[in-house]
Length: 134
Image 1 (cartoon, one colour):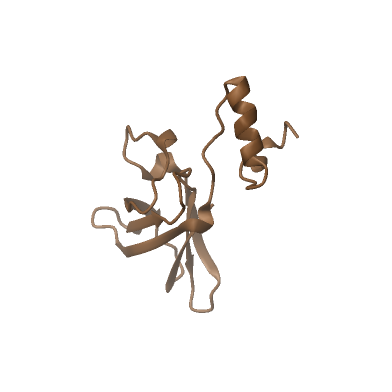
Image 2 (tube, rainbow, N blue to C red):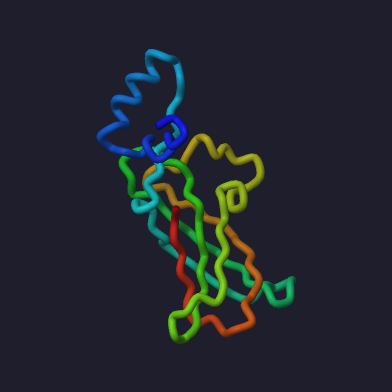
């Protein structure tokens, strides 16, 4: 269990017991990871104005969780007309948050986060952009 402890932190039925355990041992649990409670509210994908064959993405997302949660890993996927993946990139919080942001403070409920991402433009024409949180 110790080696596989990270997924256990997010079990809703186990977390209260872990919190009581940490209160006694003076340890801290990491913030909950609830990527399914995060929604993209706005996105703009365009050609990068200064870098050839690159895309610039302005993205705004919000957490609908009832509490502060961990910033997610964000994946941007580009697909062709047939729905096949032509490119993808994952961004960890340190990649998309501004320098000096306190990642450990977490994502507050209902407060939009605006980020700008850069991605190499795929060789095959992408017609769809999908954002997923992990």
